[in-house]
Length: 206
Image 1: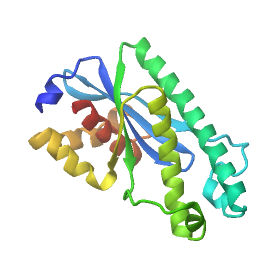
Image 2 (image 1 turned 30 degrees about the vertical axis):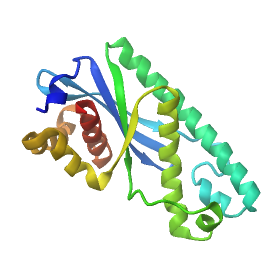
Image 3 (image 1 turned 90 degrees about the horizontal axis):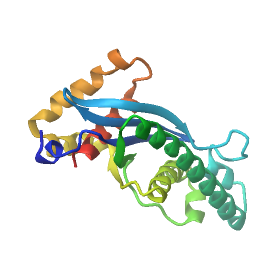
Image 4 (image 1 turned 135 degrees about the vertical axis):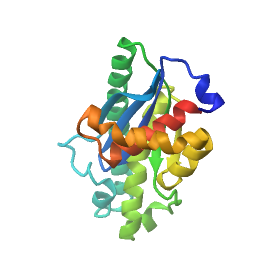
């Protein structure tokens, strides 16, 4: 266990989020006597099913004039951030009632490639997909910042490296324990929850 991990308060926990279009797999990890444990997990929806163009905001914006596209994206971003904030608020209250306190959050990132101006994004389908991924990650980031939850991003491809840097020789056993938690917790426990849990464990230790 790292020195940082050894100093973590027993009631502290951290949140990891793996984001998809319109939703995120959220996992909260704390540290018990036996090591890291999952204390909460949810699928958090951050779009309204009735909102036109909400699920794929950049795809929808592609059909609009640039000014209308900007307005649509701004409205959609505000709505998604609000829904993320409301859902995270419920998570925080649930954890608070059980004696836990979120001390930080991690949002899993893709390649981290910077995006060009909107007109160029809308002209290239691969960029539209990349922008939508960043769009929904930003909604969660905005919600965390507004709720004063310290939030960082970790690229998925860097998770193993980050884990090794934080946990040292315990990184491998930790990953195995997290992978096996599905047998205890039950479904869903897919790569979404596993990677979110690992990210949360890293944030908790740091």
